[in-house]
Length: 299
Image (cartoon, rainbow, N blue to C red; front, side, top):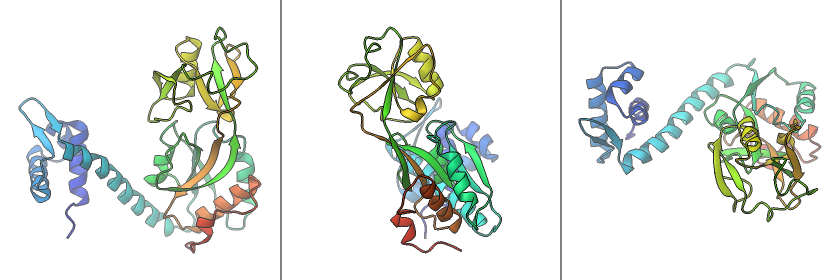
C-alpha cells in the first residue's frame, strides 16, 4: 500500500509553500481543522516530523524540505501523466511547442515547414515561456516539445536532439576596458561581474563575480547599460543588437547547443514526427535520435 496519497501531497505542498494553516486551507478550499488532521496523519504514517509549529509561525524541518522538493516533482508527474493520457486518446490533438521569444537561432520557420510537409503533421501551438521555465513545461505536461539551450537549461528527465551549436558573445557597456578589442577570451572575463540568472546556477564563466539577479535578457541589458554587470550569451540570444552596448565574440568559449527536448518516457508518434522534422530542417542526417528510434512509438 502506498505511503502517500496524491491529495495528502497536495495538502502538504500547499502548507509548505504558504507556511500558514489558514492561508493553505483557504487555498485548498478546505477547513483548517481538516488540514491540521491530514498533516498529523501524514507525519504519523511517515514516522517523521515535517513541520515545526509555534503560536507565531510554521517552519519546515529537514524532512519537510525534502518532502516539499520531491512532492512537487511527484505532483507534476501525476499531472503530466493525466494530461498525456487525455491527449493520447485525442487523435486531433495539437502539438505544443514552448520556446523563449527569439530563442530559436532562426531555425523555427524551417522546422515548422519541414513538419508541415509530413503526412501525419498536426497543428502546432507555440507557447512562449520564460528564461528558465521552459523545461518545466515538458515535465508537467503543459507542452510536448521545447527549444532549450544547453548547458543553460536543465535537461534532467528529458531526451533531446541537438539542432545547432553556436559561439558566445560578451555584451559590455561602451566604456568597459574590453570594449576596444575585436574579441575576448574567458580569461579576460574571469574577474568580471556576471548576472545571476533567476533559476539558473550556470553563468558561462564560472570564475566570474556574482552580480545582480536578473529574470531575462532585457533585465540583463538594463543592468549592463548601468555598468552593474556584463553578460555572456549564445550568439542568437544576443540579438537584436542594442546600439548603446558593445558585443564581442568570446573566442575560446565552449559552444552553446540549441536543442529540441521532450520527456524521456514520451513515445507518441506526434512527438517522434516533430523531432524527425526538426532534425531534417537542421540538416542532421541521422535523425531522429537513436533513443527515440529504438522504442516503438504510440500509434
